[in-house]
Amino acid sequence: MPVTDVAVGVVFRDDGRVLVAQRLPGKPYEGWWEFPGGKFEPGEDAAAALARELEEELGIRVVESRPWVVREHVYEHAHVRLHFRRVVRWEGEVASREGQALVWRPGASIDVGPLLPAALAPIAWLSLPQVYALSDAGALGSDRFLARLAERLALSPAPFGLLQLREPALAPAEFDRLFSQVVELARSARIRLLVSSRHDARYWAIAGDRTGGGVHLTGRDLAARADRPSLPLVAASCHDEEDLARAGALGADLAVFGPVQATASHPGAAVLGWERFGSAIAATPLPVYGLGGLGPGDLEQALRRGAHGIAMQRAAWSA
Image (tube, rainbow, N blue to C red; front, side):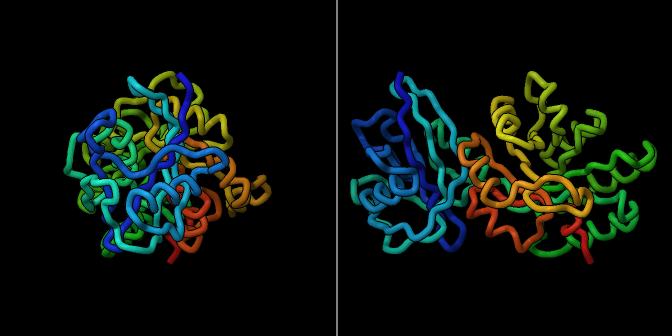
């Protein structure tokens, strides 16, 4: 079965809601709901195809769409390669030019159905925050780190919605103490906690049960695994396109890719730079966070390059 390239738009309104459309009678999966878009025409790339489709279907002019995720899906009637893009700026009034039903819904809680099978993954991605913080208790000290974490989580909104606990230098008893307090802080703040695979799997399970999180696989553990851990959320560290493909094949929910810029911890290490970062993640089948020397001021650059967001360590805890 030949592969058909399809551009798919997640169209955002100013209030953060996204647009979903109902498939018309006479089409495969008629009556099912999906994100708008359509097939490439000869000579088009994903951005051009999406802009044309949204003007034809909805009467809006796309001002800015950003690459996001590319993944394939096999239906009974077609094998499609879906180029998901986030439409963050557009002009005009959304109208049903083809007679399709249209609704705006919060991205992570779309309550219409049935949903097209290929629409389920992006709904899960929309629940992922744009900022992922990595713990730094080894540098700050456990008590100081816990105080900083409590301060950050008391803010509204919190500056991050996902946290990784990675502290291999701590003694086992000290890590136990730190972990128990971090889990409670994360649960109370309703953010998800991922535990580095450097730590025992029992911590992953507790993080999954208490916060809806799970494990962040190191590059070595990603390469060694044959199947996805049975946890609500699985992340993977990636350093090249092969790692990204491996994370997608494993069924990871997100990947962290870098280093994008120089870091204080590895000042002499080779860095990707933004252009290389963007080209490397251009066809990834899962959301990617940029990592390495990044802070809040780098978020927009990362999003424009196709990242889901940024991961940061020192910048997350600086006074």
